[in-house]
Length: 185
Image (cartoon, rainbow, N blue to C red; front, side, top):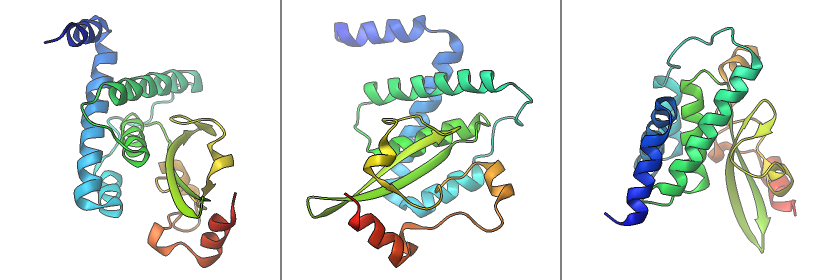
C-alpha cells in the first residue's frame, strides 16, 4: 500500500462513524448506479431505485436546519467518494447516486436532466437540486443547460401534489422541447 493510500485510510478511520457510514453508503450507491445504468439503462435503473428504494425512516418533523445540515454531509460524502473511487463516473451516474442517497435519508431532492447544443452537437447533463439549490454542480447550471420540464426523480411530496404524472422520459421529449433545447445557446 502506498503512502497516499495509507494516509487516505487514516483520514477515513479518523472521521466520525456517521460520516464513515455516509461515505460507505455513497460508494455503494455510486457503484450500483454505474453498473445499473450501464447494464440496465436509465429507465430501468431509475425505476428500480424509485420503486424499491424506500426511505430508511419516515420523514421526521425535523427542522429545515437539520435537513440542510444532513444534506451538506451527504453531499460532502458523495464528493469524497467521487474523488477517491477507482473509476470515473459521469454526471448522470454521480447525480443518480446522490439522489438515491438523499432519498434514503428522506430528503426530497430532485434529479434534473437538461441539454444544450454546443458546436453543432447535442450535449446532456444531469444534476441534483434540493430546496431550489443545485447540490452537485455549479449554481448557474440552469444557464448552460435547458432543463427538461420536470425533474426525472421528483420528491415524494411533489408526486403527491402533482395533478398528473410529472415524469417525461428522454425518449418521449416533445418536439417543442427538443427544438427549444437545440436552439438554446
